Image (cartoon, rainbow, N blue to C red; front, top):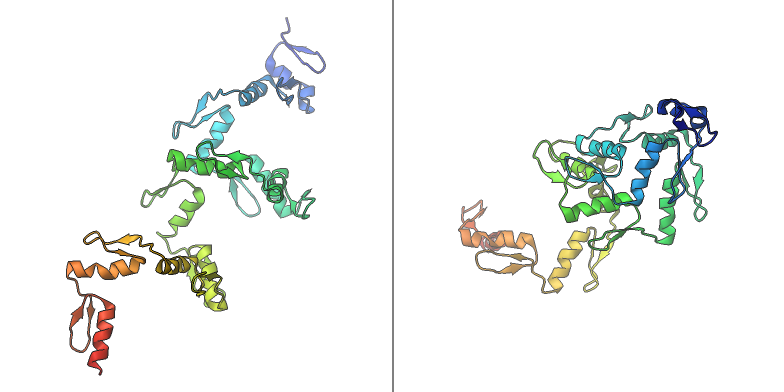
Length: 308
């Protein structure tokens, strides 16, 4: 008795493997259809895996972080995050990927193929998902919402990364100092601390930086641009952090407190200068009379008096 029947042409087979090799399947036919969303599949096992998407069933669990998955293939792909395995390599630029589909999308970049075009701004993309994501910029759509804090995201990957904040998951660990991070890019940037890698170089003075943001801030020195302005005194600054410190001068915000006398300061540098008063340390010494002082400002005053 032939138990395996093709749903397309009704041909019967003794073995399921013969049915899978059947030409209807090979020709791209998808005879196994989901009753919920009508998606078709070439074999029954793929349909069974798909059905779990519509249910809460997640039988495949990662032994590293206990994250569950509806199908074994997704678990295998997920495990590469912990092992840093990226088995698919681009032959042009040697960039590696976790999944074959990601590699195929990437290869379109080298071929200049961008078939998906935004009808609003005409920006073109090599894959449909890139266009779909891009369109959310024009619509302000953020379909992925955190169930804990209700923060919304345009990308699912951004939500996944964000959720690690709530669960404390840090899957990326530095092999030098064992410091753990929730994002791979953060680990990559951290590793530069242990090396001399400074990939961002100023075209004006050739000074190199570990972070692109540091280079962007540095370039303002050469341009003279000061984009951050204090709304109280109209003083302008090239760095946002400097503006934040300036605002504390106008307010009662004193976030840096001395653990000995509880005196508070608006700047960390002011606290550092204050601490030698309690320790008796006098790191600032006059090179003429060798008299030492706890604060640099006192040394400067001393020099003015000495010089008349």
